[in-house]
Image 1 (tube, rainbow, N blue to C red):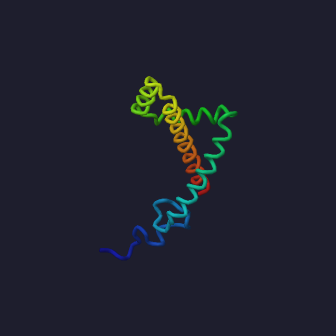
Image 2: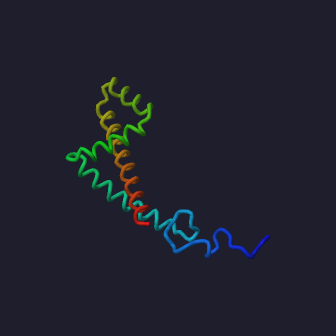
Image 3: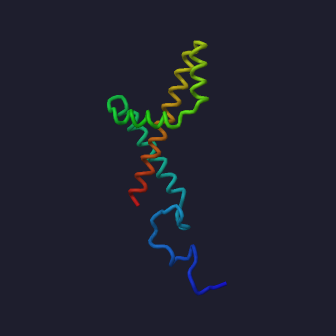
Length: 116
C-alpha cells in the first residue's frame, strides 16, 4: 500500500463543506430535515395555487399521469362500476395528494441543489 498519496475521504481531497451527498462529512439528518420542511412548504403552496393557476395544476396532472399505475386505474373503474362513489373519490384524492407530494419534493430538491 502507498501512504504518500491522499485517498478517498482524506481532508485534502475535499474542498469546503457543501453538503454534497457523496462527501463523507455530510450530515444527512440536516439535509433530510431541510428537504422535508421545504417539501411541506411547497406542498402547501401548490395546494393553495392549484385552483387558480393552470401551470401548477398542469404540473400536478403531469406528475399524476406519469406515475399512475394500471392497477390504480383498474381499482377506480371497478369501484365506479360497483357504484362505490366514496371509494372512487378517496382513490382520486389520494392520487392527487401523492402527485402534489411528488411535485413538492422535486421542487424542494431543486431548491437545495440551487442553494449549493
